[in-house]
Length: 109
Length: 109
DNA sequence: TTTTAATATTGCAATATTACGATATTAAAT
DNA sequence: ATTTAATATCGTAATATTGCAATATTAAAA
Image 1: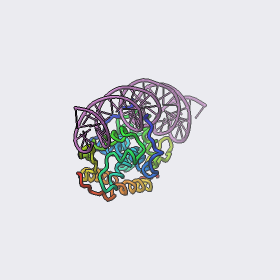
Image 2: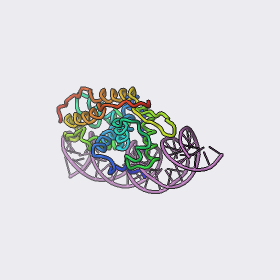
Image 3: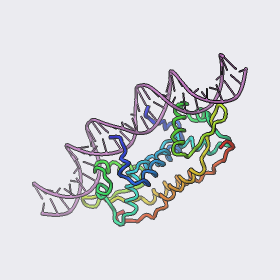
Image 4: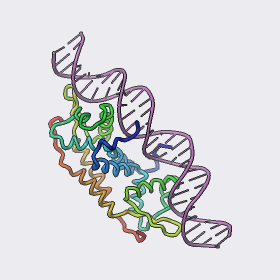
């Protein structure tokens, strides 16, 4: 039915999946990489840098803001975006906990 | 228009995003966790374990197989799924490379 | 060979996502 | 006060995803 059944999963599973989901779009990866590598904070540059409309970029930024991985500060007419380091580390930890699990090697494969 | 513009992004950005995307669903996280923790290989157990229809589980397994993070071996009537360790480590590496980038702290935030 | 069990595939219906033009909103600059 | 520039929001069209019932398919068991 197009609706994800979050209720049947644990809070942890939903949290992990929601982080993965937001990062599961190349434009949002590109935005994050640009923010990370740029010395100065960016804002409208992204529209020129990536080939997407202003409205589209704004929407992607909103989703990244929603999970808290970036934050924006109003600077006159423009908005300066940067990584929220605390949240970045939190997300990183969630992922590494997930990946550092011990995998039981099974007999079949 | 509902269609992701992969052409405007780098191969790396698309690859990272596609891994994130597949893991961006709680049912697929639950499936992976179950495969990881279970001593024996699983198959139809997932249908009982998670509260989803057999067709739905089968579809999620297919997506996990598509990125190669799990593999299935036919064992008589049933299929034994397990983590493909090689791919798992590859995906882990992609993610840690992404997260271990140096973040330039900017003046605005 | 028929039945049974496990899984895959097909074909929807419902909902979500992506993208963008048009239109706010906001604050500096003139 | 008006204009300009940067960003956000709204509305909408196109496409994707999720989920499931129904129906294959496949292989062991009877």
